[in-house]
Image 1 (cartoon, rainbow, N blue to C red):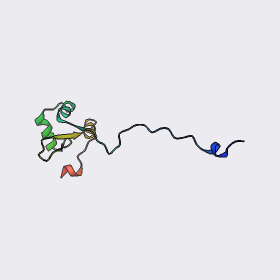
Image 2: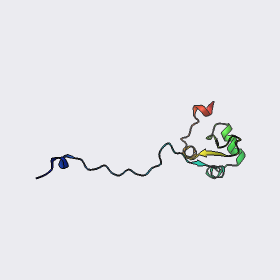
Image 3: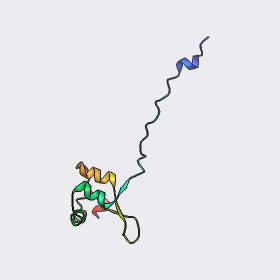
Image 4: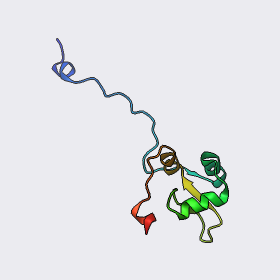
Length: 89
């Protein structure tokens, strides 16, 4: 005798792929940003001032440690990055 439930159920879904949750962002430091752009430090900060490159994020109140979001730098490299409304203010 066959079980009617087992014949009518669909196979289990495939196991989820391991991906980084969208809420987690990787921060990169200035040397890596300079490598990615080929710019000098003054050019990097000039481009930020002109809103032509993603803004850095301060990790401490004094601004001694700054990082950039890797996904924003990668989007800039692909030509897909645009300043947000908050950055433009």
